[in-house]
Each structure stands twice: as structure tokens, then as C-alpha cells.
Image 1 (cartoon, rainbow, N blue to C red):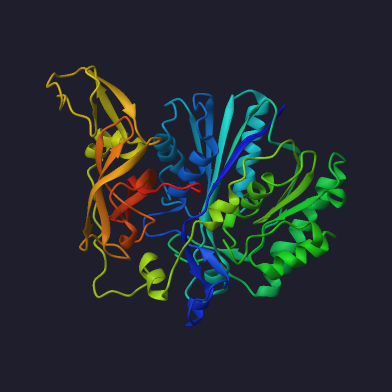
Image 2 (image 1 turned 45 degrees about the vertical axis):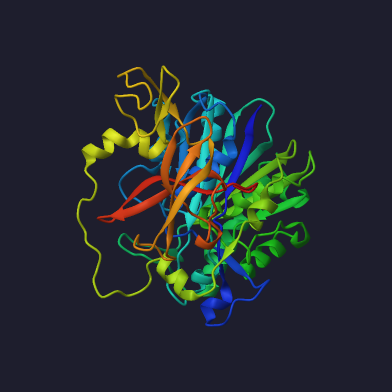
Length: 465
């Protein structure tokens, strides 16, 4: 049987308490949204979700990688190829970007399922991530959220079985973003709710039921994407199952775009009893409806992911992180890092690839001469991204551009590996300590000429990471 054999997720540690957007003080227990920080984007979150999904699995069987997002960093450059390099996948892997619609996540999942069932890929990795950003003061600014999910599809005994699916394509000028627009636009709220959301969602669910293999009215759980709580409650009522609706994570993560319903699926996979069924409905230029059955429970990690929080204390932190502050001078727009240098160093930058000499000495970055024995060209390549490390020494850099200075930079001793000089992230400067346990995280190191450049940083080691 072909199905979802593993799943994972990434929720940024930063949280934006919604009272801050209204000019009020943050308070404990207030609704909040997950916020991708200044060094995160849809692509880095997708890498983290993939690592969470794959764990210690052999990645050699992955022959197809699909990356779905409406907020990928490039309009023309494949994000899936960057992710494949960061994950150290084989060069022969087929990489595909799916964009332009909030339905991209479920569409990518169904495409991957078809490919594995047809035998064109032994295993497929589906990554779905979005950083939902609304105009200042808009409903999307408060209701949106940032997160990523990952699903590995292959043959064998699945974690989640996809029983059947149905789609409804419905063109409507309800929510849109044009080339060059930073923020998403929306038509009048009642119009969007009725014609852009409820109508296609109910039509897709009805079409799924009419196929005869899955009965939406008799399923155990509902997993519903929604732009806000009002819309979510309206669809749950219309499907006759308000009591069966899973936690939409509004007020804790937010409506995280193409990943929203799928993030609920990852959470439910940890608690649903084997044999339980679920209807998943994902909207966007129509809707997709998937009939699912849980075969076994996933490892419980969602509680720890949600508990890993760094709440913001002022709206200015949010505005600096999202570059929403007006500055005296606009940023320079030039070519940035040389494409030749990038190509030469891409293994180090994207996969954290180093080398080990025949004498046993590990080095990063790669060189021709061994720093221990002094002999040339006796190296084998070695990747350190999945190792752990400890902080040997550090400094606090007050000049590196960041929304929350200073930036901690230190020498990290890699387990059975070299010492690497790296930035630390997701930790306040006051909490940095010598000897602290660390792990690597793929992040945006800076943006030059409007182009993001990626490298690895360290964060404190924790169960949720």
C-alpha cells in the first residue's frame, strides 16, 4: 500500500502576541501568531520540516521532491533545488515547485501520491511552507501565521492512508497578489467567505462523498483550512461536524497559508486512534477534499513544538524583523555574491559539507592541506548538518544587522567533527552560555541585492527542534 509513511513540521520559535498590533501590552495567554524571524523564510522552514520528518531515515530512496508555497523567495529560481542541496539528496532527484495557490500543498501531496503509485518514484518528499504577511493593520496581519510541514510518501505500511480525493476548481477574484505586490489583497469579507471559501469547500466535500469510497458525513475528524476563526466555524457547521473539527491552531500558530490544514493533519496524526478517519479540506481558487485513515500514531512532538516560544515584547521587534520600518535610505540593489563563488562553495554553504583526512582529522571549510598532518589531498567528503555540537567560545556582535542586537557568534565543536565559527539564533543574547548544547539549523544568512543567501546557524538543542 502507498501512503504517507512519515510526517514532520516546523513552527518558528518567535511568537507575535496580537495585543501588540493593537497598541496594547502583551499578556500571558493572549492569542498570538507564529512569526518567521528575520533569518527565516518559507524555504528555510521547509528544510526544517523535512529534517523533522526524515529524522535518521535513509534519504537515498527519495526520487521526487515537491516544494509548495505562495511565499517562496524567488519568482524565477527553483526553491526545491536549494532544499534538495541543503538536505543532501542525490543529484538525480526530480525537484518541482508548486505555487500561486493556497491549494498548492494538497495538490503537491496528490501529485506525489500519483507518482509513487505509478512507480515513477520509489519515495517522494512533499514540503509545504508559507510566511503569511498582511498589510499593516489588515486582518491577514493578525490572522496569518508562519509554518511548514513535510510528508514522506512511499510503499509499505503507511502512517496515513489517502482513501480518496476530489477537487473543485472555482475561479473567483476573492484573494490575490500580483507580481510586485508585497501584500495580499482581498475583496469584501462576506463575498470572500461565501464564494471564495464555503461554496468550493462544500462542493469538493460533496464531490468526494459522491465518489462512494469515503463518506465525509461519517468521518471521525475534520481538518479545515480557513482564513480566520469565523470562517472555520462556518465551514465546520456546514459540514455538520463542529464537534469533530480539529484545533485549527488559530490563536497559537495562525492561518499559515498552504500549510494550514496540513499542519493540523500532522498534529492529529499524533493523537488519532488507529482506524480513525478524517476529512481534510483545503481551499484556494477552489478546494481539495481528501479522505484519510490513520493506520498508526506518529511520534508526539506537536506539544513540544508549540511550547518552544520566544514571545515578542514590542511591535517594533516585529516591524524590524519584517522590514516594515521606513528608513532614510533604501537598500542597495546589486548582484551580490558572485555566482562563481557560490557554485564553488555551495556544498559548504547549503549542505554544511566538510571533509575528513585519512589521518582522521575533520575540517570545515574544505581545503587541500590537512591542518593536522600537513599532507595534501587525502580527504573524503563528510556532511555535518545532522550532527550536534557544543559552544566553546563566543562573542556578542552589536554591529551585525539584526532586528534584535547583539548577535551571538561563536566557535562550535561538532560531535566527531571540526570546529566551526557560526552565528547563534533563536536564543536571547543573555541566555548564551559556554558549553551549551547546540544543533544546526538552515537559515537565511543575509539578503544582498534582493537575493537571499543561505547558510547554517546554531540553536539551543531541544526536544521540539
